[in-house]
Length: 353
Length: 243
Image 1 (tube, rainbow over the protein chains, first blue to last red):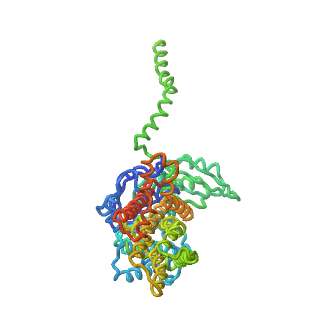
Image 2 (image 1 turned 180 degrees about the vertical axis):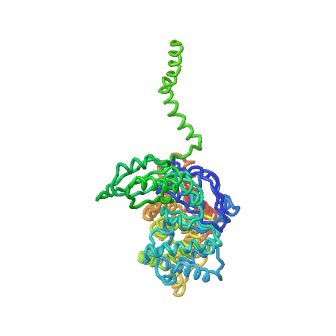
């Protein structure tokens, strides 16, 4: 198990990672999602022990990464954003070097290299110079390096970047297979990839964790943004008034005129999608509106992601609280007259009495 | 640790780098011997290898920074520093492995230069004890410069800058006893003596005359240890400071 407690990183005065805590359980694939510059790579670098943290603690199998780095790193395979390969080395040479670096006994090295080469399908390039390989192959060599020695935990920073769609599928299935006896932390900004591979997701933005949960739960709990799509023929005004009257409808987002009297409605829902949809359909049919198409967009990780990323962060630290207090005190004088008004009204009432 | 040492050696010997460097050293060394033999005339009929080494130390200023300039900058350039730092090998071991690899190339340079005394021994007479002492001094001086070069290369991501700064530092270090002799420093005898105690040239002088003094060995060895630990500290500091 990897435990991350109150991990914080400052770059100068800029806070890149803000007091984040989570755990990675055994045999789990944890997705790390966030826009560019969210602090994904910084966090991963800290967990892997490359970057020292400004504050907090990372424990890998009970070993603190700052206090017992060698012990902690023995259980770790790391593929950074840029594959850490030596351009002047041959693939096999490079893997042999990495195997030595990880302390794999000499007699087991060639078997181990054989195993990871087969797994990542780099056997046929094993005698090539790394600088002559394509980006996808370099990425795979870097991945092979992380798998050497069969470490319990794997940290993969955007492992599928630069791969062709076929290779992406292969790498994803490798990651899924690894789950049997490994834990994987895996960052990406490709949402479909994360939802295809991961058990749990951490959504991070500007150094703050916005959510940690399974994908299903995230999609359920952030389904407020359900949108119903409706296509009708003619009777635009009638249809829109019916839609607005129906219970569970929040608002009509847009009405597109698609020509030959066909109108496409996008409707924001509040209530349970199925009931609203059924009711709306029967209302429209009662009023002789011709429905061409009706469906509710399924909640997806994309919507959840966008919603979470754009939501302001929770205030946790003292400085955030101070930030919150300062504008309030500035607002205070403006609010005072408003507070006086009821009192003035009360006085007027007294006079009237 | 051994795998890093091996990898470093591969990067020297599987490329033309080490061969070119050793060849350049041999060229300069041979030239010095030729020039010294050519200088002999009826008034001066002595020739000593110690004198050749004295001259060869000057070439260190150019050769050693070239040897050490890539030690750390290359790891940073290729992003492989991450690999080393996240592997279960301590930073100190990384530094020592790299030092040993550089020292091995340097030893090859020395071994190449041994051809001349061997040939001389066949045809004439070589004072072996003095020669070995001179070699010891030469070797220690080289190791000290290697650690200095590594220390400087740990500051930067650019190998060329590491080489230029290394040359500058080694130049200053070589002539420290000359600097301590200038009029400005002779005004302050205490400062002058402190500065002079850092001078390596007079210490090398003893070696080349066939003296092995404990204080000289301690001087060189402690300089090597101090510079290696500074290199270690500098790498750790860089990690902590990053960003």
